Length: 173
Image (cartoon, rainbow, N blue to C red; front, side, top):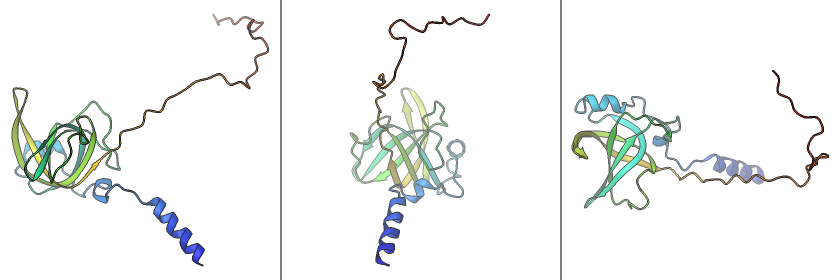
């Protein structure tokens, strides 16, 4: 009986995810970024789950502001590597986040509530950012670059090596 309980515990622990539930599951009334950009004051307080690529990080006295280029999300909350975006938004996180870890181009997903807007410039262009008061944040791991090594198997046999196949290949006309 104890063995069954132990196996059941290990099985359930294997199914656990380190991704917080608000990141994995969008809120029922998830406001799209395009809608928040049109009327930010009307959307104040709305629950959102947005993600994208980090553009910049600014640490202030008690909080960190992250500028994020929005990307569409997969169903589990991970940002897609896409060339389209609805715009940018600011994520306001309580406490300090290391800019070396939360570096530009890293993918991040935040969940929280809309907290108005803020106007800054991108270059010389003024831009109005919706601000998300972050309750949950998840920095996605950098995908490993698996090396693909192609090699000739030593067990592969070619009876015509090195002279080639005796019947020449002819393209169909």
